[in-house]
Each structure stands twice: as C-alpha cells, then as structure tokens.
Length: 322
Image (cartoon, rainbow, N blue to C red; front, side, top):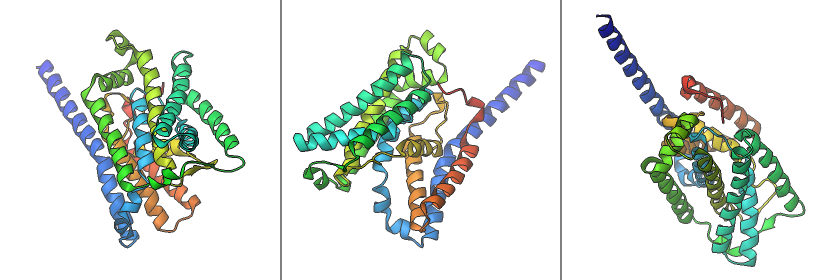
C-alpha cells in the first residue's frame, strides 16, 4: 500500500515538474510577444512600421550568439566575443583592400578561430575556468584593437559597403541558424554538448572525448563570430576602436532572455538563440524609439534582465560554471 502511494506521489511530482518545464520554455516566447506589443503601443505603431530597421540590427548578435550557445550548452562562458568581432573586423577590412572580399571573409573566420583556439587551449590544457580565460583575452585583444585604430579607423574595400543589403545579411544569418539548428538537434555534436553540460565525468565514461570537444567548440564559436565580422563591416566599411564593444554582454543577455539555462545541459534549446536575440533587439530598439538616453536604456535593460532571470532561471539545475 505504501509502495503504491509512493509511486503515485512520484508520478504526480513528475507531472508537476513537466508542467513547470513546459511553462518555463514558453515564457520567453510569451515575453517576446508582450514586449513587442507594449513597445508598439508606446511608440504609436513605429515599432511595427520600422520593423525592417529593427530587424537589421539583429544579424551580428544572432550569428555570434549561435557560437556562444554551444559553449553555454556544455557549461562554459565566453566574454571575449566582442574582442573577437573587433579583431576579425579589422582583418576583414585589411584583407579586402589588399586582396578580395571572399579571401577577407575567410581571413576573418580564421582570425576568430585562432582566438577561439587560444581560449580553448588555456581552458582545456591549462585547466583555467572559462570565464577567467575569456575575460583575459577580452582585455588583451581589446587593447590590440585600440592600438590598431588609435590614429584612424581601419577602412576596408569600397566593395564591402556595396554588399550591405538586407537580403545578403538575412541569407547569411539564416544559413548559420539552419546549420546550427540541424547540428545541435540532429547530430552527435549536439548530444555530446548536452552530455558534457549535464555531467562531464559521466560524459567521459560514455566515451565522449570531452577535452577535444570543448577545445573545438571554442574554435567553432570564434570562427562563427569571425564570420559575423563580415556582416559587421559591410555596414560602414570600416572599424573603429569601439568595434565589437559590449557584444559579449549583448549575447549573454539575449541568451538568458531566451530562456537559456546558465549551466547548460539537456534543457538547452536552439530556440533560445532565436527568441533571445529577437527579444533583446526589440527591447533595445523600443527604448531607443521612445527617445531614452543611453543611461536610461541601460537602467531599464538591467531591470528587465533581472526580472527575466528571476522568472526563467531554473535554480535547481544551476551548477558552478566550468
């Protein structure tokens, strides 16, 4: 009798947890609809009327967030994304002037992958926490960016600006998103990432080569942001000292707003990238359309970020970041 009672109570508890998980997964989508509706009302329809302008700001964030999503799925963090974007943007500009645009894109990807390899080496081989390593490389390459742009912005080929079309940027973004979605949900790649995030020791016992996987993920994330540098550069055709500044913060906020669990693992969903990026851009664009100052925007963003974390975070599954 007692065994039957325990079984029933466990089933009820599992159903309750399943419902909570379902509600938590739907909240970011509901939040996106609510935030968009509220700002559309507050801006008297300008949000909807300037939807193409709003969407034009999402490409770099969404592409770069894809790589960081993979890192966070396995329980890591990366604060060097802004510096990677800045360095790769400079390389894209320089190579486009001396060679051609296709080679410049490849050079940007290689630059991002190289910085990602540095992060991965110190994280995997030297056993330094991911957030410490990436903060160090963030400051290191941010200093190099400022040095290279101290006299004047680094300009690229005139062909870069001519490529600044919504069709090209949307196509590039969709390619990255589709490839990322397929790789994460339908290949061993995604299974290994979730397994490492859920428990690295268990993943090792399951035969997953965790060290090589973690290293390659940082290289991949850097390469993806290196590709995003091409999208970043074609907007104005040059790079200033502030190139890529605060991108890492934007990505982290976007992913958390999208419902991304900080500790990664099995609860990570690729939809976190899409919903989170959209939510972040709608929030920042709406505040800008309302005429808020930068300080006021940061204040509101901070409050909204805290509210979303308080609502969406699964505190029972949080672990120490690797």
